[in-house]
Image (cartoon, rainbow, N blue to C red; front, side):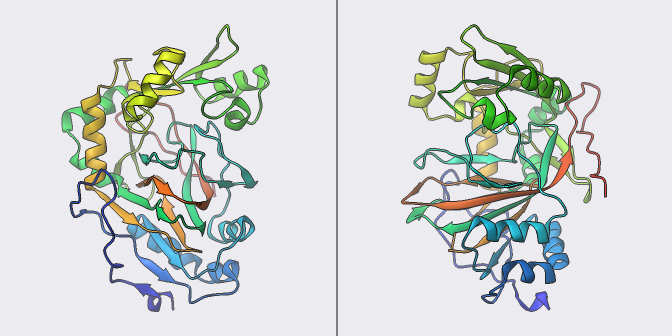
Length: 350
C-alpha cells in the first residue's frame, strides 16, 4: 500500500528561501513518498497512479523519492503513467529545450537570479493542470523549488488589491526579438508572421509588428480562478513575476535604456492599463514568501504540482543543475471578462 510509503513527518529543516525573511511558513512542506529504489519508474508510477493523484489533490504538491530518474526519457515515461495527456507549452517567456511532447528542460534563467513565485503559463488560454519537476542533477548550492498555496495567498493579500484585480483582470505586455527572452519560434512554434497572427487571434492576444521586425503583444487575463475540482478560489497569475519591478535593478535599467520602457521583454499592468507600482509587487512577493515551503533537491527526485492551486519558484544556485519539466492535463482558461469575478474554467474533456 502506498500509505506505508507516505512519510508524514516533515524532512529536516532547511535554510529559509530568499524572500521569506527566515520566518516559519504557514504552508506545510509537501508530503514525501518513498519509491524504495524501484528499478522501473514508469511501472511503479502506474501501480500507484491513483494514490499519487489523490495526494496531489489533497496537498497541492508532493515529492517522490527513490524513482531513480536519470534521463528525460525516464521522465517522459512517468508523465505518460501519471497524466492522461501531455501539455504543449506555448508563449514561453524563456527558452527551453524540447525533449519530447510535454517534456522540456527547465527555463533558461540566470543562475544567480531567483525565479519568483508563479503558475506555469497562467497568461495563456490553455495551461498545464499538472507539472512534474525531475532532478537529474542537483546544484552544488541552492536551486531548490518552493511551493505556495494559491488559496492561502489569495486570502492573505490586501482585499482592496484583490478586488481591483478581480474586477479589472490584468494585462501582460511582451516584446519578442532575437536578443532577449524566448524567440518567436520558441514561443509560438513558428516565426511565420501569418501563423503567429493566426495564433494570436485564436488566443485573444493583441499583436503588432514593429519597424525593427520585433513583435509586441498585449493580453488581458483574469487574476483569480476557481479550482474546477476543489472549488477553491486561487490567486492565479504572473502579475508580480513578470513585472518590471521584480527584475534586478541593474537588469531593468539596462533593458529600459536599450529598448525603452515600452520595449521590455515582459511587463504587467492592471486590467485598465494603469502601471503596477513597486509597492504592490513587493506586497505580492512578501505574501508569497510567507506562504511558501522550500523543497530541496536530491538526485532522482520527482516533484508533482497541481499548477492551478500551487505556485512555484526557484532559488538562485551555484554549480551545474539539470531539472526536467514535464507538463500534463491541459486545462482551458478564458481571457478576462469585465463582468466576471472569476476565470471561467471549463473542465478538460474526458
